[in-house]
Amino acid sequence: MARRIRRGRRVSTVVPVASMGDIAFLLITFFIITSNFVKHQTRDLVLPVSADIEDIHDVPQIGVAIDQRGQIYLDGQLVSGGASALGSQLERMLVERHGEHTDLYKVLFQADEDLEDDVFQPVIQAIAEAGALIQMAGQDQ
Image 1 (cartoon, rainbow, N blue to C red):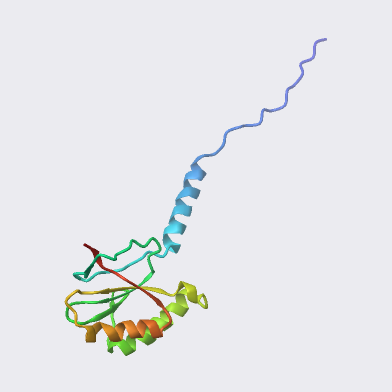
Image 2 (image 1 turned 120 degrees about the horizontal axis):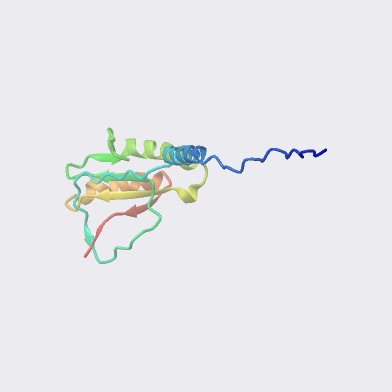
């Protein structure tokens, strides 16, 4: 009498790759949403020209700009109230974004080349009083 030996079922070795695409898409979406994009708007500024311009690799995430009319912008938003209002708003923004890490308090300052000193000096003073390091934007000769 011959008996047949029953073999066990073979285990499938197929890896479901459809779910890997979903996971990759979700990860990309997560990183895009949680990223903090630098949003410096120049507002049609003509930056001053200097021979002492250096490229910076660590661009500050907060920007202050003064246009030709002397209007002050903080991260692209018009600041009403002049340099004094800028100082309080900037200080609050620095603490919100960086907490007590004062070494991260950096601000990109952009001003039109035709502005007089008495227009942008109070803004620079307000940025300094807020505790930020100022990196000024300009054009290389």
